[in-house]
Every structure is written in structure tokens, then in C-alpha cells.
Length: 494
Image (cartoon, rainbow, N blue to C red; front, side, top):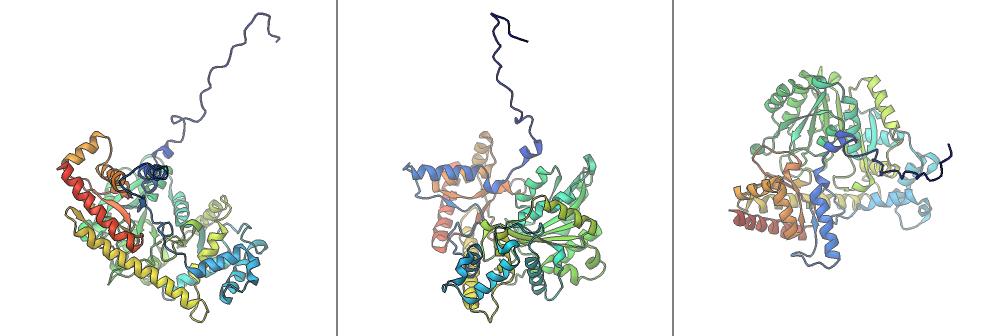
């Protein structure tokens, strides 16, 4: 209808956004990820302020918050990067600057890629050749126990595979909602994924007084209480531990498998730190190996998903996002559904798959690159072992800080005593006491660590997680600076 003369067209008012905090997915709002949380955001601001010439009581921000080896100055392993360079730029295959075995390896990987290029999609579960190499690696690692490539799914780091398996497990409403038992302290991927999937997080506590041991009696307690309000269907174990650095004994793993079997729980074994074992008398045992060696009925019936990654170990290739999951005793029909689920995401990054292949299939003793590869690998692991020992020693020499032995992985998780006045001040500011401590530490020293509250801890105890990755010449002063700060903080609030 034509507008009549003299009529004013009404200007539209401001439109309400379709997507607001009130209308968005509430599960996403519940997600928290401490490792990259508010403290890290503040560290970033401080770095920018330093660049702009703002005066601070420190000259650099040290990010000891995340297990990012190369960001901390660890040099990449030469062989891994040589082969990757050749895969990314095959023109280099004619160069005299690369050893023969690196070229042979690059050609083998490229042959398995679509169009002989890392830029092509792979099948959704990952390049077949690489899955076969992973299966052979698992078989060697586990003393000859066979692994089936069809049970192996390559992934975007281990994290992606963990979330995929959790998605398969989550079902039900109300009291029938899936519950997942996770260790406390835990790696925040688990709490974040369970919040996003609207599953129930069931906490079981590791025993700090016994070097973060896992106790089946505590699993029983957690399970019994959880059954009142959810349906527990899965049990997650992180071994070696993150953030706690403990390495499970074989007896402990057997007890956990028996418990999972009796209680009909699907097992998730997060084994991404399997190369990182330092303490004398500690040894990595894979859940797959122990499960198989336990024989009937466990070996044929207990469902297990175990995860590994190229991000940690001696490689520290976090940015390539290479990982895998091996599923054991999974219902074949569910395995088909898992394949469907990963196919929606097309495929994991192909350069990450190529890198993972080199991790599971390193140079053989007869290869030209073997000696250098072995030397570099052993140097990294020996340095990490020395840093683990140093961290424990320096912290335990400081009054009010207690640090369990760092038997494995890449972190220490010391307990700190905080004076009542500091706890009260934190509560006035509406933050967890250890968050208050860590923020003050960052503002005054430039050291960025993650408060224990982001990982979970027993009521009334306070911790922080710190990576042991900084180079030795930076690590000792950092540990001492942190210990001095704790003493000063304690005095200020006592």
C-alpha cells in the first residue's frame, strides 16, 4: 500500500540479538579451561605492556602454564623436521642436504597420500599406512601383543579422540544421565568436555600423601555416591599423571581393570606422557598390555580406549596436532558409529598424521639418521629427568611448599600453604585463594602458573601446576624466585 502524504515512516528500534548469553547453549557457558584461562589472558596483557615500554618488576613473562615444549625453547628433533620438510616440499627430494633415509621415509609417506600430497584429504580414520605403523608400534611397545589397524583412529592430537569417545558414551536424561569418573586433580579437558556434552563429572581423589596414588577404595566411594544421581558408565585414568606427575604401578593398573570389569565401566586410558618417565623404579605399563596379559575374562571383554599424541614425550610437536586412539573390545556396531562421527570432521591434519608416523616409526639402528636421532631423544629425556628432580628439591626446601616426586609427565603440582588473611582477601575479591596467589605471582614476578582450583583439589588445600619445561638456566632462578615470592606473600598476609 502506498504511503499517505504527511505520514512518517517509523524508524525501526534496535533489534535484539538472536544469540545472547541468555539464549546461547548453557552447556558452553559452563565450560572452563584453566590452562588457557583468565590468568593466561592477563599474562598476554602484561607481555603487550612490556613491549610498549611499561615498567614492570620483571623483564619477561615466563609461561610455565602449559606443556608447550618448543615455546619453552626445546629444539625440534632433526629427523622429524627433515622428513616433514621433504613431505611439505617434495622438490627438496633432489637436494643433497638431506640424508637418504629421510628421503626414503618422505617418499613412503607421500606415496600413501592422495595425489602424493600432504595437501590432500585422507580417509577419516587416518592414512591406512600410518595406522598400520601405529599398530606395529603398539605391538613392539607391548612386547609382541598384536594390535589391529582397524581399531586405530588417527586424530587431531589426543584431545580430539578423547572428546569423540566421550560423545559416544554420553546418553540418558536426569538420573540416567551418563557419569564419567575422572581423577582429581584432573586435566581440564575432561571437565570442559563433560560440561559441553552435559554429562555428569564424577570426581575420584588421588592420594596426595601417597605421591598421588590411585586407590580402588576411593573409586568405590565415588561410584557409590554417583549412582544416586547419575548412571556412571566410564572411568578415565591419566598415566603418567597430568597435573600430578605420578606413574601407576602394574598392580594398580590390574586393580583398576578388575574394578572397571566388575562395575561395567568403559575404560579411558590417557597415556600421552608414556615416554616421560623419570623416577627410578617407575616404569610405564600400557593398559592394553596389562589387560591382555590378565587373560580371560578381562582380555576378551573389558572395553578400553587408549590415547597417545605427538605433542609431548621427547617430540614436543604440539602445533602439528597429531594423535591416535586405539579401541579394544569395542562393539563393532559402535565402532561403525565412531567412524561416522569422525567422518563429519573430514580428517585429522595430514601433516600431523605424517609427524605421528615418524614418532611411531623412528629411524632403525641401521639407518644413517639413527645415531643423531637417538642422541637428541636421550638429551631431551635426560634434561627433563634432571628438571623433574630439581623442581622437587627446590620446592621442598621452601617452607610452606610441598612437592611430591615428579615421577613422569611434564609438570609439578606443589601444595602451598596460604595464610588465613590471604584466603579471606581472595574471598572478598570473589576468587579462589590459589587463583589470588597465582595472579599476584604473575603481577610481581612475571611467572605464569595455573592455580590448582582449575584442576580440582581436596577442600582446604591449595596448589598450582607448573611445567618443568623451561631450560635449566631459566628453571632454577624461576623456582627460586617463586619460592621467595611465596615467603614474601606469606609474611605480607600473616
